[in-house]
Length: 357
Image (cartoon, rainbow, N blue to C red; front, side, top):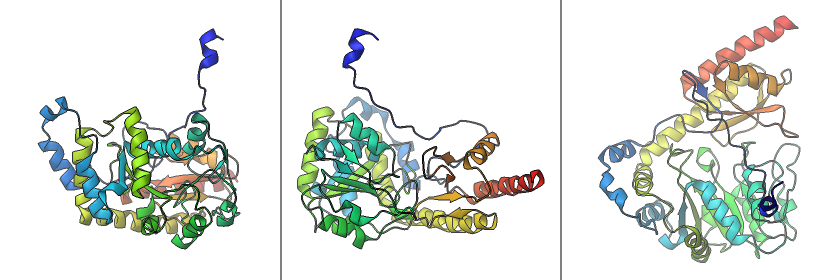
């Protein structure tokens, strides 16, 4: 070990889903939207003048903040934007979780949470989901330094009602509660309705899923104006110009086209429900999804083996080699054509398994 290594901050990094680049592949492993962004995004991209890139972007991201404030019926000083919701959440960890008391988040949840907690040296505890993989709201009624959970949860795909979210807020008025709503548009009820009532609530959303812009990296938070001011203070202490010119311009176009947004979300929900039925016919059990993915298991198959066989055929899904969920696969909802290819493979796999028996 070199002498200087003794002073290095060591963390176990987050492991993102594979980003393969194989001809003809079917990519159902990272919860990307299978449909393109709104038509206005493409039009604006073609009209984009590169001359503006010589100038710094607006550090306040005013055009995007204004569009989001109008869309979600809040004041502009209640909106914070960042480079994807991961950027927003990381800054929120740094800003709000400093009491020295352990923060709380579920034991099965977005696996970036423990990474940020360890990186920023924040103690944490992980209340267990119940036997049906649901958050137990009573487990968050105890002393803590802050709370964060996704709603719907990932990778389980389950959502809790706003009344349960409010119950957690009622029992935690002295800490910041963050609700991570990356998948909320696919069937869950947003906690945005509670923002005016609870000044300690921060709701975080992303453009990566329902707005088809994972490659552009845009996330945002909505909360009390004071919370947003504190977030901006921390952001400006690191980098005043986080949102680039192109992201701001295209982000606005994505927000403005509400009809296209609703259309693509409805397509994904429809395909998801069809997929639940088709997979059920093949013997799979799936949780009641409010997301753009299904969390499935099969009583006769080893999840890792099926994951590997799918991968060989160029069909990528997500496997988590962790306790309690190591017999589950997470399958992103693709186009109808992509899902048909998945079903065809699974039917063949089922026939092969029966022959071997």
